[in-house]
Length: 136
Image (cartoon, rainbow, N blue to C red; front, side, top):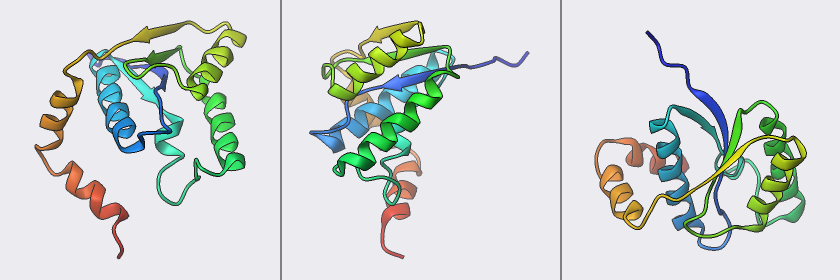
């Protein structure tokens, strides 16, 4: 029997310590997947190189609004707060409340980084990721 995944909007911090926050986001995505959820994180997809630039306010706002469009399709929103609440996450919480959508607040815990680094050191995914943004 095939397990059906539950669609969720994933909210984590992005700005500030972006490399760390992206690694944290990937760990949170994995956590969602291991819980039987299909996470959508607009700040991962829309801030990829060549898509939208978070440092340009109009593009950041465009990405936030596009991400909010997905919220109506999700069963719930999940917030990971090991690094606190960003302004974008607070906007996301307000958006979920306006839709009367359930949300959960989660923590990965103190060892998430070492676990994530160990996962990233295995397999070819990280190498492919780097190659995708390297000059042709």
